Length: 280
Image (spheres, rainbow, N blue to C red):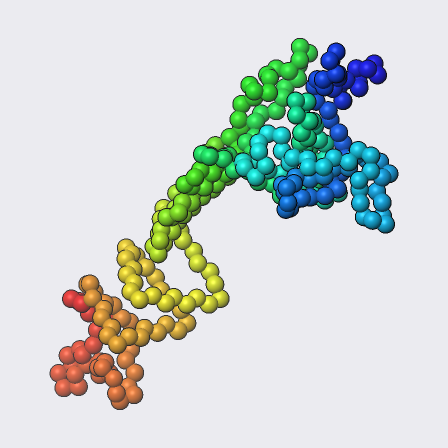
């Protein structure tokens, strides 16, 4: 049993003295190389009592210098994980050239993931395992999706975020030219200097104070209502046109102004005022 455990952990030596298998070592990050010939690698100290507090060195027995950060791709290209200083790591050794790589870590300082074409990161919910007397009803790869997911897709030209249930939910798409947010039937598009909001429901803006400053504007609506304690329309030229204008109330008589304060002709009794103007 001891031989089997040692072989599994350290590898084994063939008849010619060559190491076969991989050696797995646990320790902690003793140094992170940020320049020089070992830039992009770390030093790992196996767990022992070799730390010298006087000289702040950790070069005791089991000190591994220049350990590469990832065993799946070249450092600095593609997938990269830099562990935190003093964090626990597991490293392995390539039996052909004795180079060592990090294969596990407890805490990460930097995580980098890049690709040539696309990357997807997210969570997609699957149905739970159903255990029967004969074992699992379905294997893991046979479990169906429940419809809930939160994923981000990256390509070289776009980023797409989605949080949805059965395809309905929040979707955000970004390119170098525009950004689109879609929630149900509502779409907000930012393209250059143009912002567009499209919805089949209601757009509500609530604020204590709002200032709108534009060079030119146009508002089109089938029906609108403007209500306030005090409403002021100010402009060098104000024109009301398009059909009928209806105004209720009575004209006050301060002595000046464009409205006729006499309700009827004092001589003939003919009306001088009304509540509606047509042909505007």
